[in-house]
Image (tube, rainbow, N blue to C red; front, side):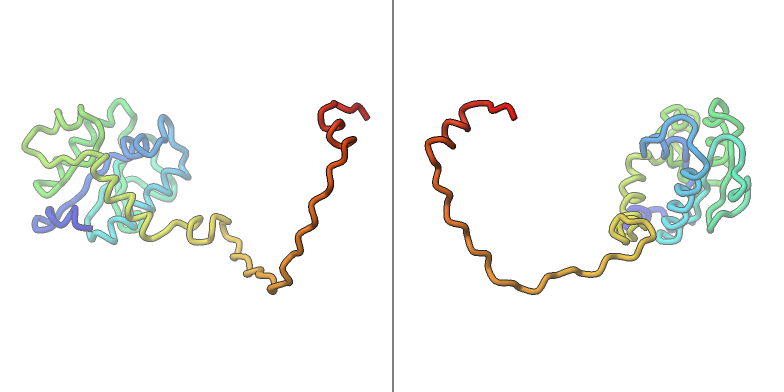
Length: 186
């Protein structure tokens, strides 16, 4: 994508606030581990496509498949202890990554704490590039026609048959006209 080519000369590291990203995707509150792993996989595909280093900051207990401080499919995953300490942890993580770090968050408090000189990117702007990743690569559902893991159905085209003959219009009798006006009880 062209959006992140602006940052490439200084070896950019994206520090992504996954709490804000989940909220922008419509998942508020405690997000199930399955959804968190799906988001991490999408971020990993994005990271590979854009050739950017990504640090995903989640909140809560570390997931079994994505331990704290380790790489998960090419991206680094770290965890804040709670939602209350999440903002400070995000800022500390982004500042620790150096001058090339771009903090991606939808939280205004994060931007204020980080300061005006630091590189910040709003979630809404990031999602324009991020969502195009899933659209261009296609998800499992869209590539298989929305049927999960089932193979696509074979084309069931009928052989051309004779054109149907139209029935001659039925003659409406006087009794039929009266029956249409009256509610008949069977």
